[in-house]
Image 1 (cartoon, one colour):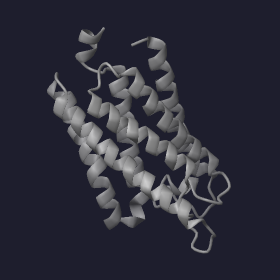
Image 2: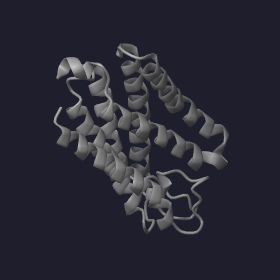
Image 3: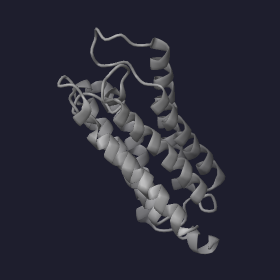
Amino acid sequence: MPKIDRVVVMVLLLASFLALLLAPTQMPNSYSWLQHTTSESGAQGIDGAWLARLGFLLFGLAVLGQTAVLHTIWPLPVQLLLGAFGVFMTAVAAFSTRPWLPTWPYDPVENWLHSFAASGMGFAFALGVGWRWWLRPGPAKRRMMDLVVMGTAVFIPLAMSFLPNWDGLLQRLMFATAYAWYALELLHPGRELESAA
């Protein structure tokens, strides 16, 4: 696994993280990062939405790159599921959700495509991390982290449906765990690396 490839993927991950972290600063005053989601910071017809969309695109490209970099380490089902996450994430960048402003015009087809891609992304991530947990050899701590991250990917979307005023915060916590998991996988993929080298 060439070091330069890992560096490129890490730069993409960090750039994506920063773009999504800063995206709320580009939003109108009616946007609240506690209440409104990252998708809404990239919503249709909103000035400044380009930054969130860039963050989604970079995240998708980073994960696709990571799938290629770790192809000798991640089992094929994990590659396929997390590769699908990368594809769905780039689709989330291409198709934006409706704005949070109730009177703002939007394209319902694009909104549906965004929702479809976001749902696919969530399922692909939870299943990919779950499969990684199932097949991972090595330390119990890493397997426990897989379970925590998978649980976060499953339960936070459920919590969002019960706590809509905290959607933005909850979703950002979920994204943060995903970024941390991908970064740890990239930097310390596990014992398999020694046998693959």
